[in-house]
Length: 120
Length: 224
Image (cartoon, rainbow over all chains, first blue to last red; front, side, top):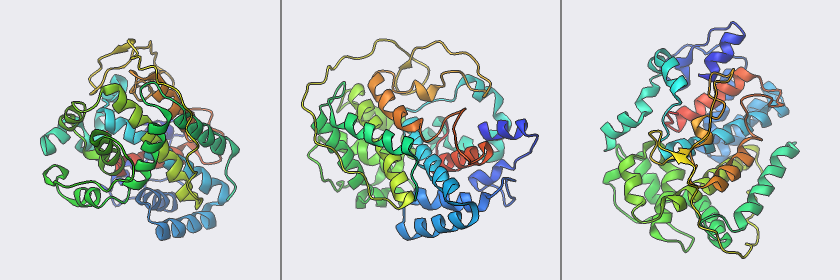
């Protein structure tokens, strides 16, 4: 939702389906392929893959942005555990304003009702 | 790599707090939780479960390193390795083995540790060692200032206003561990140096930041 709002502020339209691999199109953000590869490697935590992705990011974006990107990735790797581990529902404002985006990205597949349906 | 001082300082502070008595657990136990959390990432049972269509039909024993109750071990391992497929039924089962407040304190330590360790491995640094634990008894006082908002646990009861981010001024994620405010404080001391809704002094653009946040949330199967 915040990515969509970020695009609204800069009058940019992003293809959000790419975030959950429901689209082959690019999102439309500078350095996205490098950053997404870095995110996937860091979350998967395979040392050789992390090293490769990090070197690529430093080459493409510079060391400072690479460190900042890893900081964001690490932060969200932690905060998602809080949300998942407490069964946290969306804030009402978010729930009401994201029907279309959730459909586009298939994020509803991760909802409490969907998890209940799959795993009880 | 040049690590921002604000980030490394926040990690050091978190390790100091983890080593001290919490609200429900003592410092030695809290350190053990962090060590078990690091060990859990290589647990064979968890890896088998995470590759299965459903993690709930596979029995076995976790690979453990710490001397902790079975309920703690299950929480630490599942939060680390398959948090996206946790259900309320699972939560109800584990909280028959431990108080909800202890569950929250464990969750806060594990999630804070995941941030620190993911950052270390991402930047090619060694994991920071745990510190000598500080003796002291936890108060074991539950925060009564909570409210049911549909999560598995009651959340912090605070006034919220709409903000210009589109989120309420205090979003649910900042209220999620409301029964144990010290767990919220520990976690956000680290988290705030990695991400903020506004005023994050990074060269990484806001769009790049939110793209990474959204992708990592998706990789963790996080609805929130």
